[in-house]
Image (cartoon, rainbow, N blue to C red; front, side):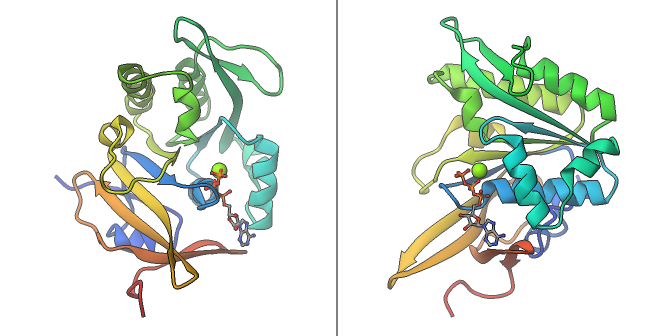
Length: 240
Ligand SMILES: Nc1ncnc2c1ncn2[C@@H]1O[C@H](COP(=O)(O)OP(=O)(O)OP(=O)(O)O)[C@@H](O)[C@H]1O
Ligand SMILES: [Mg+2]
């Protein structure tokens, strides 16, 4: 089985994947604080918009206006994309009831919507979106435990799969190779943004932990974030 590929928007990462993410897959981009998850998600969004492929960006933590500001610094105008019908940004604060139901409250209107899934569903239909981006997944799991987490994540992923979108979902977490979480198993791909300390130097690397159905470069590779966004040095070994 060969997949159509979707560009990650990131120089070097497409090469590591042999062309990009498998189309229709759900990708988890994980990492610790400040590792570049949000920038990675914005870069993916901007690249899709540049190809005229509509995106639904689901924002669950940092206000969307902040992110639009970061995006502008990199030269990506999300307001313009929204005006052109290439982007819908959903800006929610999630809370959960005692019954474990997650309720999304619209940050602009203050209105509590029925469910995150139904909001994503109608936004995708409204602009015929080919991509769903969500930052970060952890908000969906607030107050949930064990099997509940698996259920909530499964429900969200099913909604995205039914719409035939490719999804990039960020995850606040550092995987050390011994801890595994259900989110990693439910997704089709896992990218880890890792910071290591070696001789008083921070080394930032990206690693592809899993990518269902395709062959990929499984070695860690260095990355930087600059005014051009995230760049991956996929041709160089980590230690020179
Ligand atoms: N224009 C820029 N030039 C260089 N580096 C930048 C620029 N903008 C942001 N950064 C770097 O990117 C880092 C933050 O990236 P980002 O917000 O994507 O991280 P994150 O993983 O989403 O963090 P959090 O978990 O806190 O949400 C900053 O700490 C900063 O070092
Ligand atoms: Mg972030």
